[in-house]
Length: 309
Image: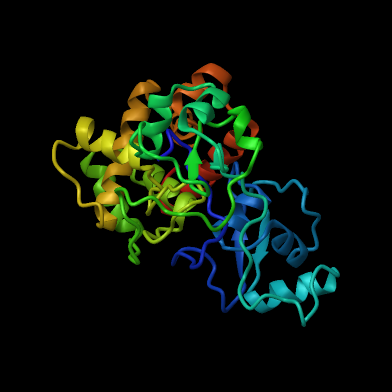
């Protein structure tokens, strides 16, 4: 996981039952803290598509209590075509991913000649920390093309952005073609003293409840855990071995980690969410980056969907 940040999805392939179904448009009453981006992301549309369907600009400010129309897939495509963004011949068959989402924080693709120590030095962290974050042996050969996770804001993160197709390290946890429900996540969160709505909002923001997701930084599963975070949770928090192929244990590990971040933040859930995305050490040393603020706002805006405040 990230001391994460985990990376936001480039695509959410399904919508939750409480989100607008793809087959029919439905009205949505804007809650406090919601934005066009967060509502679009929660319903598997681009900000542009949602704005076009409602006759708004992409940067429009929306007021709490106002009503937006969540379009059907066909309505969204028609709105985009009407705005000259797509044509019927180029329109995608399914809703596009939310383009306003924060980019993967600190993702880096290993280049020929790179070394773990060199990447760590450029990123301002130790070789041991970089190895831990990515579940690597610090003395093993580093393969070109491998995606590595770095703390958000590391200067090397912009030197060679991670690409979509990269090798996935053979390390736990494993991505499996399993989906979980908000009820599953809520039950696990409650059992570990974590807010069910907070855990569900983070999980939805991370993966859309899909355990088959692997990010460009090799975060895996429902909670988008990096191998190093998975190992740390097993060693320090779980009290037992976790099943690396289990979607529910992926949720359990993410919930345990999130709960520890909440405790470390003195109960400040927003600060814990920031640490989940950006990394606790990075937040302490740099403050919240703009993309982290966007991530936190989106998670908090999603909480009412799962019974939260």
